Image 1: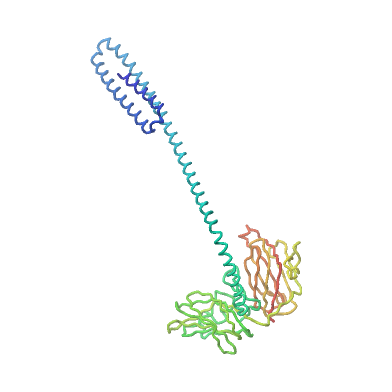
Image 2: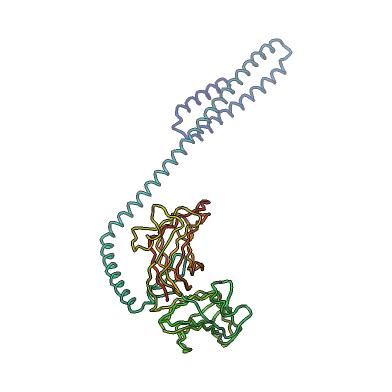
Length: 442
């Protein structure tokens, strides 16, 4: 009986392998396992029956002969079982392989679906662009005409009010004055009261770590005399207010006659650039609280640009470079041509020096240059070869820098220094100056 069952299982197993496409992998495995289980149960039953017969017949030699035959059959059945297990392992391996192929096919289909969706989106965008082209052209024509008209109006407005001509440099909110503005120094200053934190002179000492500060008052004030007249003024104010709703006002002074220019609300740290188109010789800054209560006026730094008719363009009498290469000698920086340049060698601190043909009480330089490396450019005024630092800025690539120095002297110096971190520990830099023009206040 077992042989017949085993034969049926083998035939069924071969038939299933031939029709593997007709059923799923899971169904095939389940069917084979079921048949093997049935065979094992039948085998167990027959073995138990044989054991019983052995116990009953073991005393006879005929029984022993039958036992030998039975043992041979048992061994034969074990061999068949092992063959069946080997077949099952092969089927399992094929199933895993087929699952891998199925997953790879699903991944490929997902990629194809993604590409189809992306192509569809691109086609929709192109259709929208083509549809909107006609409308866009018409819209752009209108915008161009509107912009040209606005530009003409802005130019007319600028001609009427010179204070509208301004821009910000690369370092932030720093005002670059029109051509007839120049930075000047405060010659005398005072506070309504002097707090222990600082005197009036600390507001114009060039150091933002110090400050001019009053005591608490209803209307504290700061006054400054410039020692010269002007037809307009621009103030850059850095201050602090401990009152959340305080206000600061600027007045122009002309022989102690005050004319209010502007006012603004301030809170904690503040920076304020204010232009006043009034003639005078000084200015005044006051502070008030929104409520009737005392307030402190604290001013960290004030710089002053004035509008003057005494600003004149001068020529450089002589100039020099610490070194120069094929780019050109020093005089090419002031030859009036942007096609030439003064250029030093690669140095630790290349230097350009210029002497003017007259003395000045203030100077403004318009510098156009180029830097191949990240670095810093600094400007000094010179007076009988005594140097006073004026200002510095970061440079990289093409740059244009308008710098105003409120120092007396007879010349100026420009230096360059490499930014070591940005230049991969390169400690040298080239100073390249295409053109320099200078206006002085006599």
